[in-house]
Length: 433
Image 1 (tube, rainbow, N blue to C red):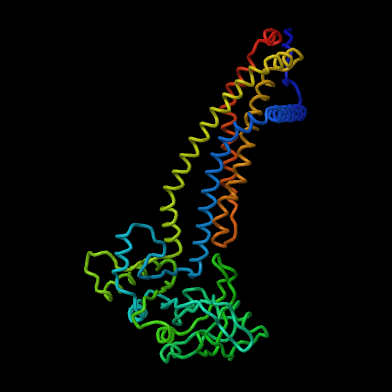
Image 2 (tube, rainbow, N blue to C red):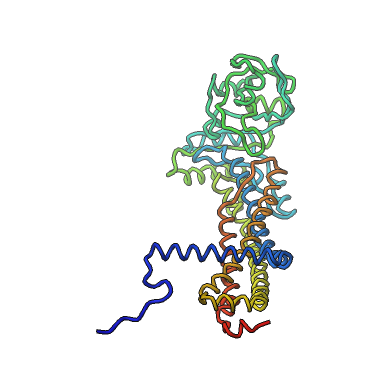
């Protein structure tokens, strides 16, 4: 009967025991790595600087992009479901002077055109016309507001298109628009500010020195990115044009399709109605912009894709350069610690223990730089949020990706120095001075 060879290392050890030993080995390697970094502070700081810069550049740009994207999403989320808007100017404008001049030469969108869409768009469940006229002070017998209240001129169809729900009183009616009445519907925040005792319905308030009767209060939506989105007053579009604008004032048409299935057909129908109303020649491009929540987000992503790609390339180059620097420093470290390696091998350390030690040291070096880069990048990116007065954003997905890349860089560029250290001759290493 042949006796099987005796197993060595972790062979034959129970899985639980093996896991405990590997955990203890990893903990020991981590402790030794931190001690090595602490022993050469300046060298370690200069080495991790490259990793720091690479991760910082990724995180700062992606955080800033996330802030801008969240800002845009919140700004346009006021549109209801299956809703799109038509206006003279693009909602997001990128381009040169010639593009700006093209938009400027377009004819304004008028109330008459909006009413024509409302009459002929059979696939729309509601059509509204909107004008943003001014921001100013609102005064009641109780209180005055700062000059930051938005005044919107609207038609009744704007309420479902903008997802406005009336919490108290009523919304605008066609008779309010036809008669250009001095009535208004106010946002929840404005109602609480100028009517602190409640019950605003039937009360009077002054907009730009002119009295209006409050007929309704809109249910709250919460704070928007650029301020309190419940701080506004709505008056009939005709009243607004009489008081604050002109009949050819540039307006926005809001269209809500009947259901998701008819959305695309509704969009094309409205496009055709407007092209006919604005006398756009067949084959010529539209002289108006049609957009929805999804189209704006897609436009933002497409425009910023090149920026994100460029940052990724630059950061990759920085991380590769940092990895080469880490490999160089680790090779120097192996040479300096040759005798230490010989002693460890002499007292029973195996090759894998030495490799684990040096790879762990490279990974720790990268991760320290990565953590600092993430912290500085998040602060730098959120400086945009601070300047725009919007809530900060923490891009956890990019942070995880950045730290994961740091680990990969540490493993890839630390493997060769670790292999070289593990394969040193123990006897020659003990003789090394």
